[in-house]
Amino acid sequence: MKHIIKISDIIGTEVRTRFSLNPLKAELKEGDEYLIDMQDVKMISRSAADELYVISHQYNVAMVHLSDFVRKMMDAVAIGRFTKRVYDTTDAKFIICENIESLNAELKKLASR
Image (cartoon, rainbow, N blue to C red; front, side):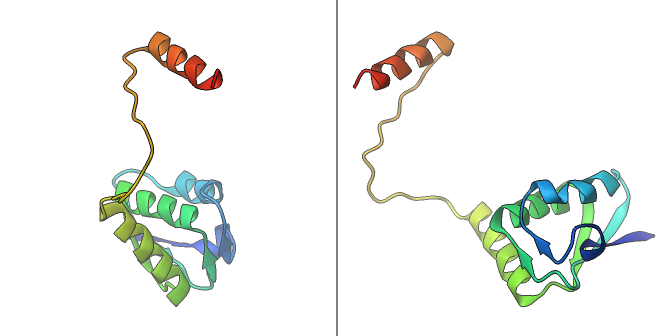
């Protein structure tokens, strides 16, 4: 049997932060099945959508009644997770630090510039 959880009842119609999904996570148990009802949720931030993506893959969760906005945000998160980030140009210098001492040494060099 799937447990139905209506997001607007426990979080509200606007899901603005990752932290706001903590009440949802508190209700989920490993091995159970869940149907997350997104009806009445009008807005979800990118970070909250990313957290919901993680939750949906960590637990046995399906989502229904996503508004167009929420669906687009969830799709953007999914695409972002599977798209390799490519930077055409960068002036970043990568420094490999083997331990905390070498990290501290590099940070001191940066601070003295």
